[in-house]
Length: 165
Image (cartoon, rainbow, N blue to C red; front, side, top):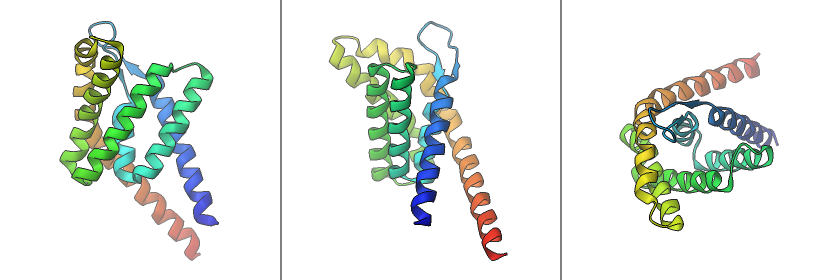
């Protein structure tokens, strides 16, 4: 019972964290090239918490975004493809630093190509617009992963300390 409560609490907090991070965008030099902070955070969450918590938190975040009107169906489609590709990359490559760094850019390119293919000949402009975000993601994901690991480890130590008393 305690593990279920802990699991649900962590997933809810991660979903809220993803939703808030998705609202913050760093502007790009050209229109449409802004960078969402949720991309490197999502990869870091998958690396630290595992795919089950990552995909559940991501789905909850997407549902909340749709209900609040902050995301469109296309945003959610891109995010779902991104999440599945990140999960597949972690399954194939393990939880290695190079896998963590490359998962976001590969998932971004793949999701943009899929959605661009659905819409017609728009795949290349979609990918080109994402290049600044791909670079930001590759640079920021590893420090975010280390930060999340430290936070998780310190939380576990604090719980052990409280339980022992």
